[in-house]
Length: 240
Picture 1 (cartoon, rainbow, N blue to C red):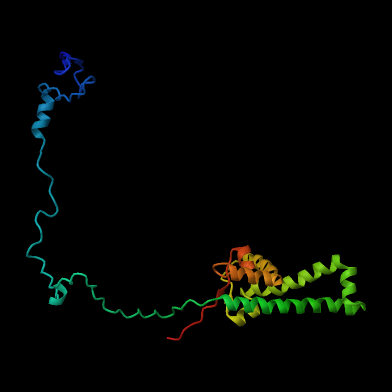
Picture 2 (tube, rainbow, N blue to C red):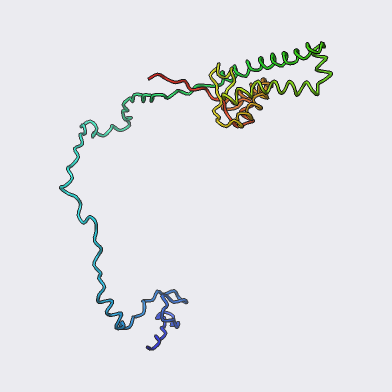
């Protein structure tokens, strides 16, 4: 076979390669070069090739096999609304609530009641926890606190933490939370224990926690802001 001769651009007379699709100088698009005669094995392959379109799954629409759908339209619905008039909207009945669905209940006041009551209970427990060893030692409680504060402060902290940690870890709520219908939706005991610590701080600093509930958009307590967990209203089962 002889090598194909080089071509010339008809516009700028630039010599081109045989396989060039456009002129690199003027950008003129060139026609593809003419192919030579196919070889013997190429001609036999082209003769046996079938260029028939592939079969289609559906060559004709299913006219006559599907019954038409009857749609009833009132004549009033086909009328155009008057210019400048507002289209009439038919009142829709509110959707019936599903069985078991509960309306959202505000948890602001239940949280305030829980923390305020627990703050009073915490003060009472600390007074009793300090008065008992002072009575056994025969000294005044304030004298015991001032004289042995390195031992009394950890003792009072442990008693106060156990007061909240034990019910939170075991049941997910303190007795007062259950009384006011508030619970901690957390299943992991270690996260409950961590929340009991910040909840103790929130109850001990109740005025600051109340300020956080007033200013925060979701009315979160100081313990909820520090731990990232939330105290939610306990769902009440509805009879069917």
